[in-house]
Length: 64
Image (cartoon, rainbow, N blue to C red; front, side, top):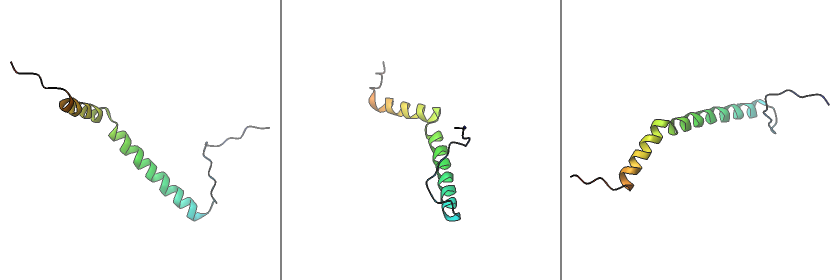
């Protein structure tokens, strides 16, 4: 049996214009979600979230 070469993508839908367009739209939306997640999980965002959490959860030092 010979090796099959492909890009690793398999779809179980009919290869017609309507489905191709729908898959392209899905791909585009997934790319947008990926970008949003990358921004949401950026080091700066994580640091800000942790800073806000510690401000609320840890007691403030007494002035003194």
